[in-house]
Structure formats: C-alpha cells, structure tokens
Length: 354
Image (cartoon, rainbow, N blue to C red; front, side, top):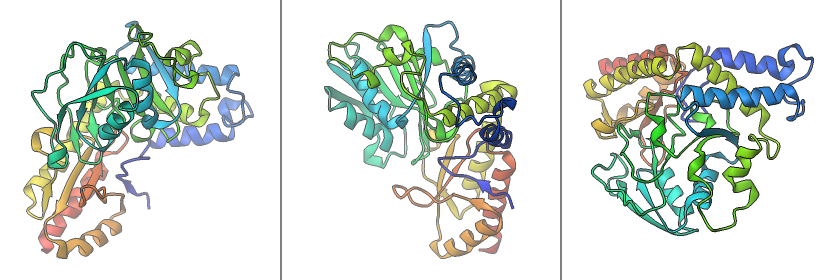
C-alpha cells in the first residue's frame, strides 16, 4: 500500500518526478549512460544545471532582475555561514522565530555583531514577532519564512531598508511572494523541491563585494556565480531531480496554481484541528504554516489508539518534533489533498470512538 507521506524532510516528491528520476539513473534521455556516471562538464549535465537555474528564476518571477540562481552543497546550514561571510561587515539584524533562525544567528556571531530585532523564543516559538524595526545602518536583515518544527509561517514580509535575506527551506515555491524584495533567498532542496544534497541559493548580484574580509573560494557567492554552480563537482542527482520537480511545478501552473492547492489542504487540516475537541493546534492561528500543521492530542490515553489507526490507514511520519511534541502534518507541494483527507478522517473517527 502506498503510504500517505507527511514527512517533514526529506519529504514527498511527485510520482512523475520519482519515475523520471529513476529512469535517468538507469539511462539518461536514451544516452545509454546514467545521470550518476556522466561528467558534470558534459553537455548533458551542463544543460540540466542551466535548465534548473533558469526554472528557479522563472518560477520566482526573477528573470532579468539582476539575480543569479545557484545549486550548492552543504545544506541550508552552510548558508548560515556563507551569508555572514559574504555580507556581514559591521552588524546584522536577525528575526529569531525558531531553531533554524537561532542556528543562523549562532553562525553569524562568529564573524561580527548580530542583533535580534525580534524573538518568539520565550513562547517556545509558537508565533511570529510583529512590529519590529530594522535599523537602516545594518548590513542586512535575516529571517526564516517558515518554521518546520513549530508550524509557524511569516504571512507578510517587511519593506526592509537594507538587503533582506531569507531562509525559505520549507516553503520555497509554495506561495506567491514578491521575491524581488529579497537580496538572497536560500532553501535546502529536501523539503519542497528535491532530494537532500543540494541547496538553492538565489542571489541579487549587486549586494555582493562589499565586505573587506577575504572569503574562502568555496564560500564566495561571486565565485560560484562566475562558475555557473560548477566551481566543484555538483551533486548531480539532487540537481537533476530538483530540475524535474521544477518542471513538474511549471506544468501544474507554477507557484500561483500550487498556492491554491496548498491553501485547500491547510484549510481542511486546520478546520479539523479546531473543530475536533481531541486536538489542539500549537501555533498561533494568525501565524499558522500552510506547510507544517503542528498539533497535540489532548487526551494522552488515546495516543495508542490514534497511532494504531494512523498506521492502519497508511499514514506515515506525523510525529511531532521533540521540541514541540504531539503531531505534525507536513503538507508540501507534492502531497495530494487525498492524503490530508485520509488524516482528517482518522482524526474524526477517533472523536467518534472517544
């Protein structure tokens, strides 16, 4: 039985993408060679990389606006470091909304002064801070658009007077945003774009080259841009599968079309959480994530029954993160609404048994 996959990451991919990717592992486009065994300098792979980079800019509406798309290694965690190395000269402002933003702050502090413009840490990150000010004399402002662990999401972004940097690892390509408001967007592929192993980094070129420090080559955005994401051997399979996922997304109608589907899934999920007295949402309602719904079971005596029902229904990976407990339904782009319906049905059936 095919499982309903609510994994927070690495997460579900479209069946069409999995099929094409598996075919490419055996025989890439009838070449008689696997995508895993061709040179990354070959025309076949250079075309894959260029197509993936172009699709990323197209889907984000950033073509011809001074941005470059990169597919790098090291995960979003390496970007915590790279952002600071490339941009932090004197001081930067960070919005602390969860574990990942806290880790980004920790890495940036290695290089210079960092100020938290706002934080929800005291409430175990169950909301997004509002009304914070971004100092104009800082080097940049950093935020995290969606917090996978806590199930919160920024619904609005400030009009930052300085370059705005955003970690969009868990909601990239899921909703329409004015992406031109950002100086850098980065996202680990494994939550909404592809398999683990590559990170999409979209950089506005004119914000680079303003720090006085020497930047190691592997950490220098300008070098990766100049080399077309080919400074060193790229993670070929992760890039190839990400390209296939971006092609799939374009075929669905792009970000605007997938946003409508994501809204339907989120409404269905949160409606059950709010109406069913056995469950309680963790995140503040105004800040609830469309990607990751976090909730708890109010009666612990029903835990074993509930989890048995989930297993019998083929529902996988809904256990919450240890920081929050309870349950988490991750509803990324590739998750069909039928999977959400299956989960909601189990929750409703549990209520009828209680």
